[in-house]
Image 1 (cartoon, rainbow, N blue to C red):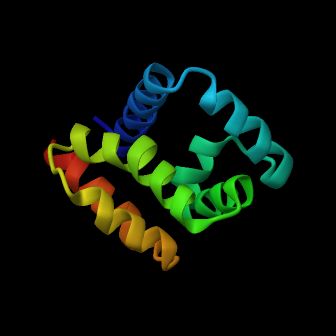
Image 2: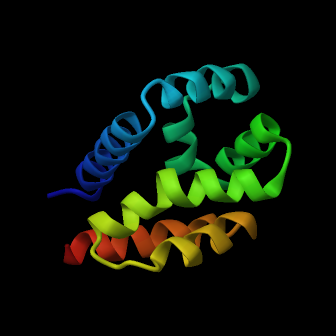
Length: 114
């Protein structure tokens, strides 16, 4: 399977997780993200994760809630899907430091072995 297909599958998994935990949340966040950046939130997460994090900062106005939302709703499902609990903390650190290529490298490596 191509990496683009694996990332698409991962994106769909995250969407299902978020929609089942907090119905309507992603729709609301997408509207905000579209106003701020012109892209839906999950697209930003996989193309520019630091921008996705900045969207959360603008949405919540504080780092505590932004970190909690990013970790719990978006990065934890990635760690669960990749069967590597605890990975969400490393991913958050990379996002906050603007290290997109390392973020994507971890995802692609783990997806290829998944």
